[in-house]
Amino acid sequence: MLNDNLKLRGDVSIVLKNSKGEVKETREVKNLIVDTGLNVIMTRLAGTGVGVMTHMGVGTNNLTPAGSQTDLLGIAGVREVLDSTTVSANTITYVASFEAGKGTGGLVEAGIFNSNSGGEMLCRTTFPIVTKGADDVMSITWTITLLAS
Image 1: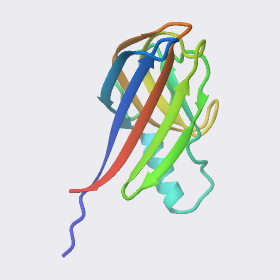
Image 2 (image 1 turned 30 degrees about the vertical axis):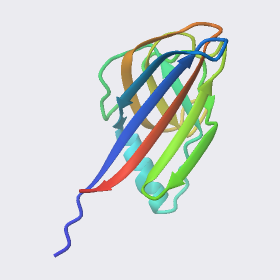
Image 3 (image 1 turned 90 degrees about the vertical axis):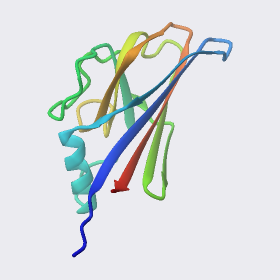
């Protein structure tokens, strides 16, 4: 009998740079694939009409991620369009940049979405505070890996 134990793992890398391009802070954190995200994955496998992931958002609420959450709890600014989406073997990597003046303040949460507002959230993470100034640029690289354990 074949027994597959599949598991999704999310790894998030955050890099904050000042206006000169010098690295100010970095964070490496894990994420939670939320219930709506799991549903998006299943409906995409079935070929139905749920949209692909297109945006990333950051926010100011560090409440522990829970499967029932459907949006960031304290969004900071607007969701940013993903710079890239790359699929390789059993991983998908999303990258977004929050340029100067966008997503500023004391940031502690991030999420991936299939719309610039509303839509479905794939995953959410919280992290120790990253203080993004108005002139800073922050990039987030989010890698989701499907593992057969």
